Amino acid sequence: TPELMSEVSLRAYIGVCALYISCGVGGYLAFPTTVPLAQTLLSVLPQNIGTWCLQAALLLAIILGYPCVAFSSRKALMFVLFQRDNQWTLMRHITVTLGILGITFSLAMLVPDLKTALAWIGSTISITMMYIFPSLSY
Figure 1 (cartoon, one colour):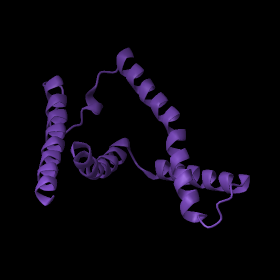
Figure 2 (figure 1 turned 90 degrees about the vertical axis):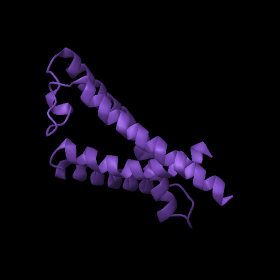
Figure 3 (figure 1 turned 180 degrees about the vertical axis):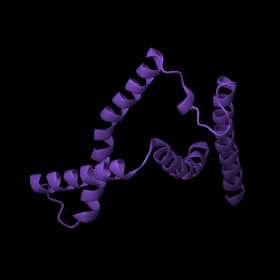
Figure 4 (figure 1 turned 30 degrees about the vertical axis):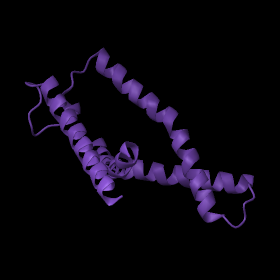
C-alpha cells in the first residue's frame, strides 16, 4: 500500500541520516584536538606502524576485491553487448576484461587525489543506499 511504502521510505531516510551523522560525529569525537574542521581525518593520522598496517590492509582489500568487481562488471557488459549471441569466447572475455582494466586504470591515473575519488564514491553510494535501505526495511 502507498501508506506502508511512505512509512518504509521515511524509516530508510532516517536510518541513512543517522548513519551518516553518527559516522561524521564519531570521527571528529575520536580525534577532537587533532582534526581542524578544514582538514580531513585521514590527513592528520599519526604516521606510525599502526597507520601503515591500516594502509596496507586497505591496499590488500582493494587488490583482492578488484577481481570481484571486474568479474561482475565483465558479466554485465558481456550481457549488454552480446545478449543476442550468448556464446562465450575467449577473445570476447579478454577484450572486455582489458577494456575494463584500461578504463579503470585510466581513471585512476587521471584522478588527482584520493579525496576526489572518495567524494565521488560517497555521492554515488548514498543514492544507492537510498534505494537499498527501503527494500531491506520492507
